[in-house]
Image (cartoon, rainbow, N blue to C red):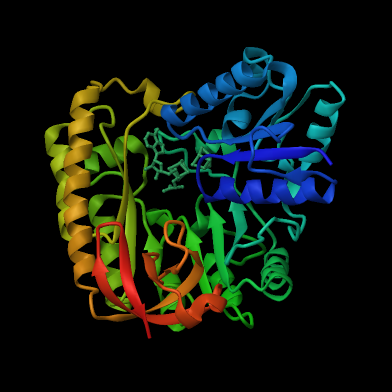
Length: 435
Ligand code: SAH
Ligand code: SF4
Ligand code: F3S
């Protein structure tokens, strides 16, 4: 049986696409391996959100070519494949196949052709296939099932490449989503569901919105935890927060990317909300859900960002006190509108120093938040044995904190929820005692 190795970069949607490709390849008689030597086929599932991510992929292809030459089959899937399509195949003739984000169902065909010496390219917009039920994703050893509810993005934030790599928004039928939830719970024994979309709040299928999806998924028997990613602040509404509040199994964990605290920059980014719209939504969330966990994404160094704009961002970070934060230096991306802005570019050294100020501040905030959790009890869904210490288990709180604790009697409980008391903390994780 031919062996393949899949390497995944990027977001949860890409991880999920990789799980689907692994499942399909296994159904078609291939075997997965983690060993580079053993693998005959390499599938690189790529991200192009920032330039650095794309560089990493090019250098990975370079390494494989140098190490193995024509001895291995190497193909690219995912966002770089969608964005560059045929040009990528022409630029790197070494590649045997290129499959866009909406062509991953063709993976077995692509690999089979490559094994017969034929190249394969497909970056078409296969909408019908997106609605087919996914009961083949490889979730072995996983305690959480990703389920995609809406793919693509129509927002065209001026810095972002995703609308060009993931295409136009397409909501999947609610009945199919529910089938996939039932399959994960009943056939695979998975009790945590994470609903995915570039903008889950834009879900719109036969009059049903995202709050409806969340409600029916959480009402399914044996679904112990429901999470979702990502919410765009412009469509994030009170009804959704009320649905979260009304269902114990929906984690009160909200990722609400703000990108900048400055109205001037938000406008240039095309985010369609103001600083005060955003802060009003944070207040609304905390009024309805006093115990919730909020995280965000920020970009520093967007063209035209001045020190005062950056201070506006820092002011939001200091006042909101996020539970977790993902922050990036602006990276110019092909085809995006920000490339045409006439504003002065922010130098790399200024962007780097802004990023480090932001990250340092967040580390302090996060550490203080973790310190306040000491001696409190939290339910944790056990995910696996700890990678560093096999006597320890690792799980996650509802707020997505990574928690380590001694295995004891809980070893056989991977996949279930237990109560733990937090004992010591760092910025990145928590140590606890099983109750
Ligand atoms: N759909 C999500 C974001 C997906 S991309 C949303 O709208 O929030 C994930 C994060 O990458 C973004 O939130 C943004 O902070 C960052 N990002 C996207 N494009 C970027 C770019 N060109 N440079 C730097 N960071 C970027
Ligand atoms: Fe990118 Fe904006 Fe769409 Fe998010 S909403 S994926 S940042 S274009
Ligand atoms: Fe990257 Fe594509 Fe996700 S660009 S962040 S893998 S949608």
